[in-house]
Amino acid sequence: MDRGVMVLLAGNGVRNASTLEDHLLKRGCSIFFATSKKEAIELLQRRPFDVVLSEFMLGDGTAYELMPPLLGTGTSMFFSNAVEDGCWWMTAVFEGQDRSEEPGMRPTEFRRRLDEIIFDKRSRNTNRPTNKPSHGVTSHAES
Image (tube, rainbow, N blue to C red; front, side):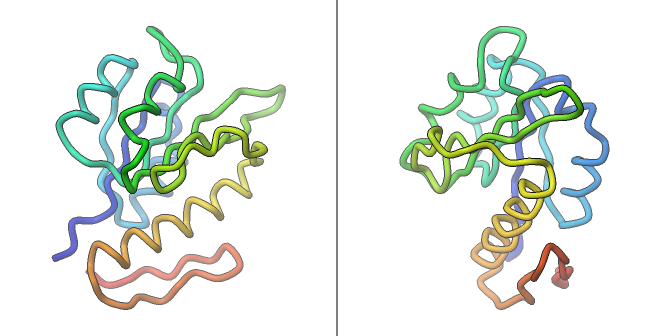
């Protein structure tokens, strides 16, 4: 059964990033929103998420504080860090492993990596083969 890829978006900036939300919806993701660290932690305690995307600075803490409940799970987490003309995405947790020392990614690199993760999670969740995206182009698997 296809439950879709479960994504948590944390922070007002991520919540208001309509292009990111559209990107995820087009790939069949189920999206949940949290505007604070407290809300994000409550959601993480209630259900498993495949991917967590957060602003680095949340109103009541930092994205680093969301990492402990994700370690040892299959969840991947990234946080955005604003720069002069946009944002860079930093890997915090990948497949339940602390990867906070990895270099940041520009938006195009991040979307490519996000698409690979979504493809992989979707394949695992549906237990059936799909067409893997190549060179940043995403194939839409039938639900």
